[in-house]
Image (cartoon, rainbow, N blue to C red):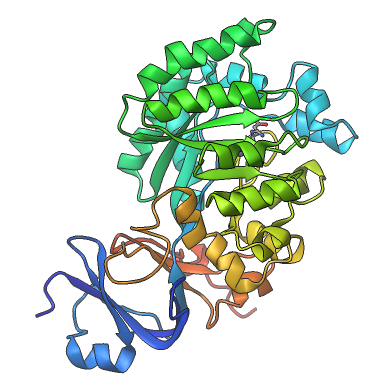
Length: 423
Ligand SMILES: N=CN[C@@H](CCC(=O)O)C(=O)O
Ligand SMILES: [Zn+2]
């Protein structure tokens, strides 16, 4: 009767990210073949109905269980580092000043062009391993450190390969308009045409690429240029996302609404009108508090967005420049302390709302029958510990599509039986 079923039982509290939000003393029945959730119920009832002696069943021992985290905005495939720029920023130079002096994104473009596919793959794998240990089961990754077709394709190929090889699902976004490439330094119009005419037709044919993103901001691409690129991308079947209103207010959120974009991201300088327009058009705001922290900028008005009914998502924005961090605990802490979000809003922001930002909410982001069994078991009795435990990773076990993808490592000294004898 239990063939191909995995049962996670003795769950102290199950956080579903849907209704009912919390189920005490719960169990989840998973179809291991499909990786989908078959049934969720009270522990006692599931125990009576199914045979728990199945080897693959897991005793959660009263711990809190919740959906796998979804990091909906990252640039995790890149070559080189920009630690020097981070130190310059600490000495008072701004992100824009460094960019205007010829640094910033184009430095990483140089490094990424010089880095081989295998090196990018290895670096990407290590970063995904780290994400997995923190409970991330789906991640978005953007290209945009190639700015020519060869290297953009190389980044996308690395992400495609990682998506096949790694338990974390990688959702790919083409971001050829991340900055103007050095070759087109004095010819931005030429670069925009290059993106539209040379890159988009090739990238849009790939089934593994879902979105097209543009850095629409002061000193980067204007709203007109962004509109041209994203309208073309849309006509070729790529769904629009926008980096907007980060450096300065440019009316980016309004443009995201006009384009019916899936998401608008950053939004540090968003206007009230932009918030209203996003709400009217179901645009998901993806807020990146680690970036504001790292740039020492004012945080995006997440509270105002939530109070206006928006489905706010939060993400690490892991990249080599503005947010060199893939720390989920830091993300959760900043969301609580700096964005004034409550625990439920924070969990939604890294689960169901993040799934919405990736247009995958029919399959992931909440725990309910018919959705993928992407879930985490905490080393804590309550999900309150996610923000109470500041900066610490309290994820014990990660299950991806019904298979155990990570279990907290045993300590080295336990594994090797190293003990200090009495002296
Ligand atoms: N703001 C634009 N893009 C990235 C930063 C890229 C970089 O500095 O390398 C971001 O989302 O923060
Ligand atoms: Zn970004």
